[in-house]
Amino acid sequence: MTKQQKTALNMAKFIQAQSLFLLGNLNEQDLDTEAGLCEKLHEDAELLFRTLDIRLDDFQED
Image (cartoon, rainbow, N blue to C red; front, top):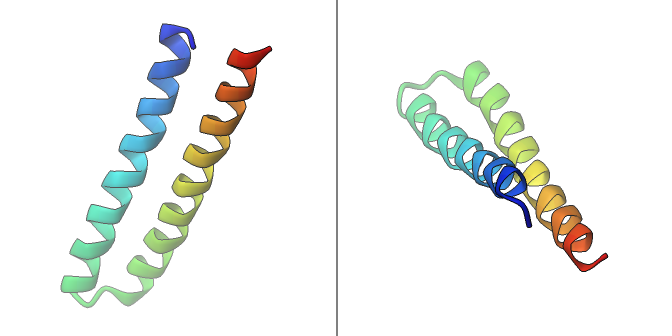
């Protein structure tokens, strides 16, 4: 895996972690609409990380 690919994977993991942190914060403030949006963001961030991880791993094997 190249340095640029590792950076992309790390950024995706960071976004996933930060969106979860934000979701908790929004829930504590009873901001239900915003928490719903953030939950979708977090789910998308998880999917992005998993997809990148698999794709970059496959790319490395080629």
